[in-house]
Image (cartoon, rainbow over all chains, first blue to last red; front, side, top):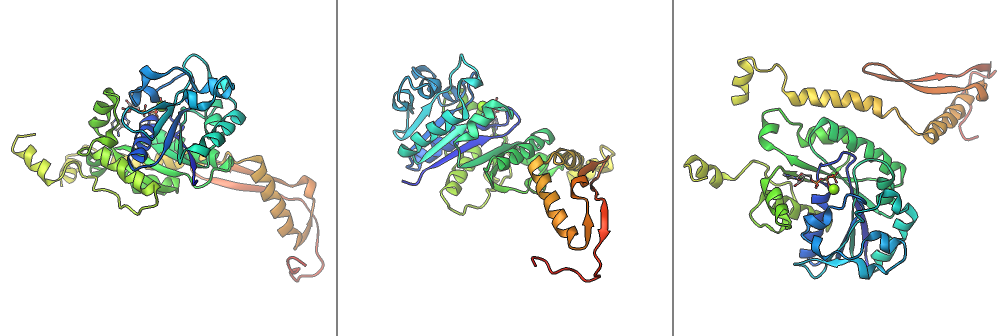
Length: 264
Length: 95
Ligand SMILES: Nc1ncnc2c1ncn2[C@@H]1O[C@H](COP(=O)(O)OP(=O)(O)OP(=O)(O)O)[C@@H](O)[C@H]1O
Ligand SMILES: [Mg+2]
């Protein structure tokens, strides 16, 4: 079976790694792929609540890496998709509870069963980062169009390359089209100019991300939302399809018209 | 158009994203000077090989470093020359 271990990383915190992991995982599962999402943010478990699976956790990743149980006992099946699973992080331990070697072994076990193993990396460049990338074949770097986030992305890209993870793909998250148009936010071209990596996708700033996350759902399942469309496009690109960047203008003509007529 | 008007009325001279991009460019010039010792060593080895085609150098005393100032970065090499090769001809590489 063709299987890929992909780490989602960023350097800077809070730019959307967990959101990206949850949405890509759900999108891949919806497209018929068997996927497992690994929360490598040990001590700050998040992926479970983003997926709405927090009440089902019994075991965590450290029980598996410590060889107390096989991974099959620790993974949790998603509420909606039969072929989507979560391996939760430990909440009461710290990053040193897992070693890069253990992580590598875990990834190699998981790749026997799953088409996609997606690892949600913690922020920073310390032990947690090193663990998260240890077993990965490829990396997705998430950034936002801000100086600090792009700077950290640059550093992460350098560190990934130093660790033999070449050609990471970039996702620019929380882009605000109107600000870009007004010259008050760096554009995709500006960011690519500086980072010189391949673009995997652009996700607009969208309140639907917050609303769906509140409910423990992922926006990729929401047919109407723009960010959901952006994530679905990324999933298709991950499967080798050529999908053009979507029109980032906020709202189509219809929406603008409705707004104009005060219908919102 | 709106942007044009707001610029005319003196809000800002340069769009803030230009400022962001320029600041980013400069900060990365400095960040990226942080190259690994292995890469530096590889550069040294290559330098020695190339220069040895033209002159005799003191390999042990060779120093290479990256020097960064406010807005540019320079590769600084200090290569003590022990002697020149007699022939003015370039030695064929790889011979
Ligand atoms: N495109 C978006 N539009 C609006 N809000 C977003 C978007 N992407 C992420 N967010 C919000 O930003 C916040 C941070 O996202 P997330 O937790 O995914 O970041 P992270 O990189 O995993 O953070 P950490 O470094 O702490 O692990 C969340 O509240 C999320 O809902
Ligand atoms: Mg996170």
